Image 1 (cartoon, rainbow, N blue to C red):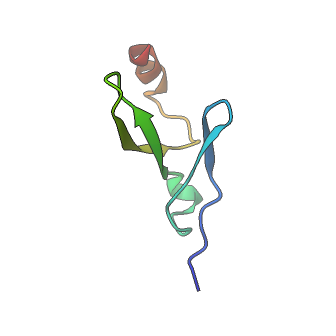
Image 2 (image 1 turned 180 degrees about the horizontal axis):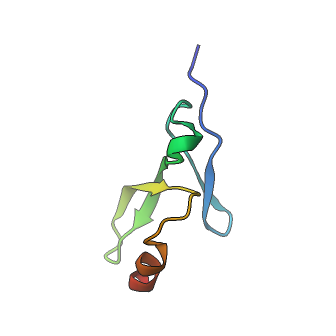
Length: 69
């Protein structure tokens, strides 16, 4: 019997979703999700990248978003 997978999904671009790859049991209290996404670097190389997300607001969210743009 395979473990139940988490149903969390994040949209990274139009038509491109990343699903949480952790087995269920990490619970809503933690609200942390992790998935893999393929990225293309400026030099054309492709790599797998780990994407971690939460739907719970972070007190640092505004500062993180300000620095990322």
